[in-house]
Image (cartoon, rainbow, N blue to C red; front, side, top):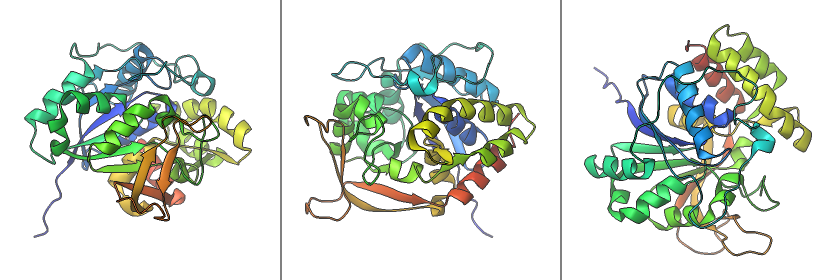
Length: 318
């Protein structure tokens, strides 16, 4: 008799954001494979109070009211906050009108929650899915370096190499907001997988994809279509492509169907002091530095398979 694979236990660290919201919904729609233990929030696309409220709203939309939410870092480790209302709108999830959440976040701060949770867990028991700036994770590692040995893997939508930057000419947004945090996590020795712009810029959400979401006929499909129609306006005007990148759901899709992605183990560093390149992901794809590999860096995606997965799973939700 074939062995039934165990569900992967995950914590989603996020700054919703329309694309974060779709990622959360994809995870909720995949209970056979993923066991969402909690959601932690961080300032990023919008300020912390809004990302926390958005996380609660999206969990309620997708039937995840049993999942606790912990609010975390309201600002980067050392820098002034940078947000992205110019993309996501004032609320972070403009385009959809969701009711106020019926729940409140837990009293414990997300950083303390992460420390306590990983210290109490077995090594390799929990995976971190990071969809925004990596401030919470870096803060937890600074506070309790011993938790690194407990983390199974961090899968992070962050960085870029071939596609370079989307918030500056050199930097991807999630890294740029808190490059010191990214540097701390990279140097910690934790198992880390980057899902960079090099992947997400190949996962373009076209008008046809939006129509497929809308045609699902459920509340979640309608909400996804409405949210993405709003957030895509900025990227469509920016890139002049036939669709806009859909970033954060790639993290969850990678857990569900890793064969949709390809990449390699390389050395990655973060530029902290460049005059024009602060926050740049220095990804040694060609191995010219001879520095040892410290991360898995993905480069490509089967976009058609990705959207088939997304639409099939979102269709399972309320």
